[in-house]
Length: 166
Image (cartoon, rainbow, N blue to C red; front, side, top):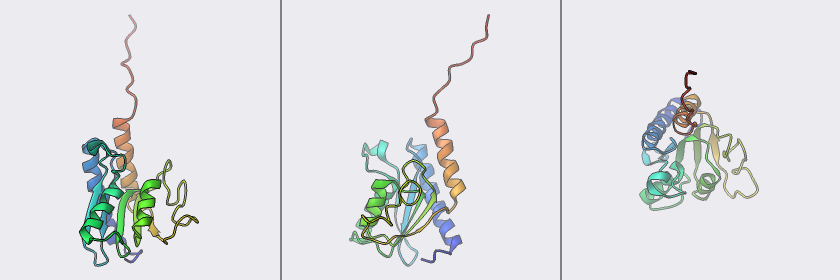
């Protein structure tokens, strides 16, 4: 995959955003992921499913990696590209590294748990035994806005109505 092929990256990130929107509509934090092979064919998708599946590991990336492994009949995803709307957390980065993923493209940085470059850089740390090529910031604004809107609607404390003084 050419890291400078922005129209292709935008196309697949749009697909990930559509999955994130589905997750958000289902009450999940809106994160979506797609995995393509070296020929540019879609081999797996994932969206956050923690609430629906009652599974703390059901992040979009892990769901997609599991599906890709089943599709390929192999856990080695060295010739694959993962597109995800949010920078992966420590668990997802670990799974990505263990899958030997060839290329990661993500939308928005995660200032709380991002472990590709924002809070930590696990791929370049001594604990990583795999080199991961990364391209951040594809459709970043769309990915970030989707998350911000969802959190404003679902996690902002409700203010009591203001009563008129009598």
